[in-house]
Each structure stands twice: as C-alpha cells, then as structure tokens.
Figure 1 (cartoon, rainbow, N blue to C red):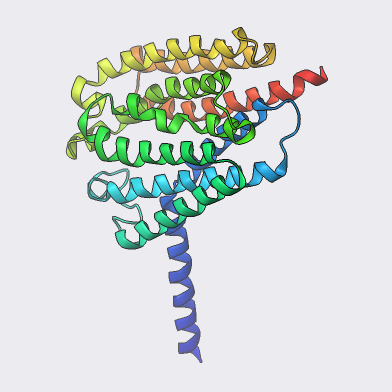
Figure 2: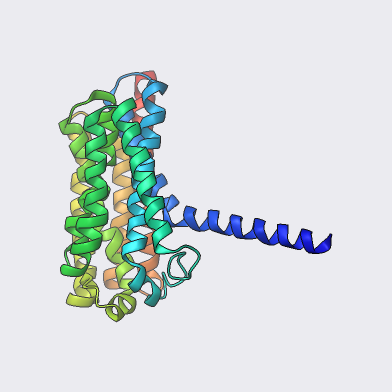
Length: 304
C-alpha cells in the first residue's frame, strides 16, 4: 500500500512539474503585460463598454498566440539559454521538457489562438497577431538577435503591436490612434531591454549575441538609454496633444516618464552595481502604470 502511494505521489509530482514547465515557457508575466496593453487598445477604440462576446475571444486569442511566440523563443534559444546564467535553468535546457514536445505545444497554442481570433473576432486581428508571432519568434529571435546590435530596436515592433490588435479586434480597422499606442511601446522597448543587457553583458558576450553593450560598450549603451527616455517623454505627450486623452493621462505620463529619465540619468552618471537592474524593473512598472493611466483616463473623464 505504501509503495502504491509512493508511485501515485511520484506520478503527481511529474505531472505537476511538467505543467509548471509548460507554463513557464509561455513567459506568463510578459504575456500578461502584452494582454493588458491589448485591453487598453480595445477600451480606447470604443466610447462605451466592451462587448464580452468580442472581449473574451480577443484577449484569449492574443494571449495564446503571444504565449506561442514566447515558447518558440525558448525552443530557438535552447543552446544559448543553457550557457547563460540568467536562463540556464529554463525548462528546455534543464530537461523538464523536450524540444519536440515544446514545438507541439507552441504549434497547438498558435493554431487555437489564430482560429479563435479568425472565427470569433475578425480576420484582420488574426493575421496581425500571427504577424506579431512571426516577427518575434522568427525575424527577431532567429535572425535579428544574432545579426545586429540594433536587434531590439527593430524587433521591438513585434512586441509593440498588442494595442493595435486590441483596437482592430473592436473596430476591424487600423486607426492612427492605435498606431500611436504602438509607438509608445516601440519607443519604450530599447531603454527597457538595454538596461537588462547591461546587467547581463557578460552572458551575451559568452554566447556571441551582439547586444549593444557587447558591441559598443556599456557607456555608449547608457547614453542611448538616456536619449531614448527623452524621446519617450516626447512621444508620451502625443496622446494628449492629439486629443486622444485628457489631463489625467498627461499628468500620469509626465510623472512616469520623468521617473524613467531619472533612473536613466543615474545609470549614466552615478550608477552602482544594482542601477541597471533597478532601471529594468522600473521600466516594467512604468509601462504597466502608463497603460493603466490611459485606461483610467478613458473611463474616468466622462464622469468628471
């Protein structure tokens, strides 16, 4: 009886472990942030409440295709992940999941997500979301990441499109305001990622990935981060200037972008060993808060 209990416990442990491993390769925290920005795109595209008949399949479909792209990233980067200190314990390098099973899993997520968007939302959103998957998992991960130090600048477009996806899910059209939301994330991405790249410079150098701190040095990268936060401040004013949002967003955007600039200034001129990682962490909070402020502005203003 005790042997049976031990076998059952072992089997349950394996199943649970596998579930956690599959969950991990979808990069759930990153996908959650992407889906949040898609939700903001949906909300800003219509004056009233979002119909749940579109909201649910759109959010789920975008989330599934984004998760598939993340899983492909794990599959393609298995070799370099095994060497880098930050990633050596990911599920594929550590043997929790085989590459073959990960490929089947990623393909299943992509097919389900695409069909859901195509059938229950609209074909435009389905194809744009699929283009985002290809942009991130193929163009960026397989080519740009290994080809140029401007990899994240160019490849960042794939990760910037979720607000556009949310907008097209509701309206079935590509609107300039949706592209402005894309521009916000596109401008935010380089300083966000380069801060992490500075912290992990030695890892990238070890696997011959030409990240900007490796090819041009840390000081040059810090200057680029600072300049991009200035550009982000300017881009952040545009939703207010074009009448897309009100003073609520303006105040929130100015405060958040000044905060990002202050982190970048410290990183450039008065950094310690933790500043790069602190800047990276703040950048995540910055983007999440910026889009929450956009959402609040959209729904609070009519009531004020």
